[in-house]
Length: 61
Image (cartoon, rainbow, N blue to C red; front, side, top):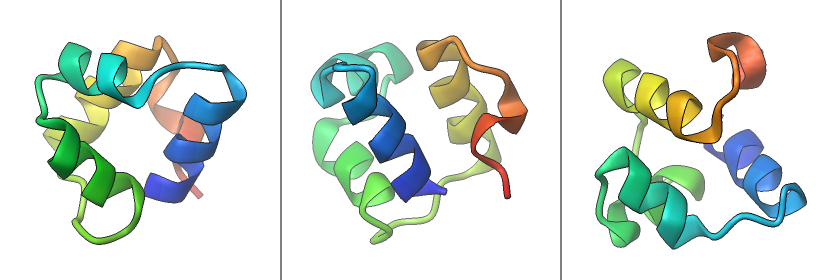
């Protein structure tokens, strides 16, 4: 899931730091989530989708 979010952010030309700030997650943790080194909790996932203004189903397999 993190990889899909990462690709979406890159394709939209967004900045990782800006999204991390909107979500309220430190950039190093956000980066670990996007790179599969840390799991994304349900609450974090909802916050990320809200920050990106996408439906919750966007990144779910």
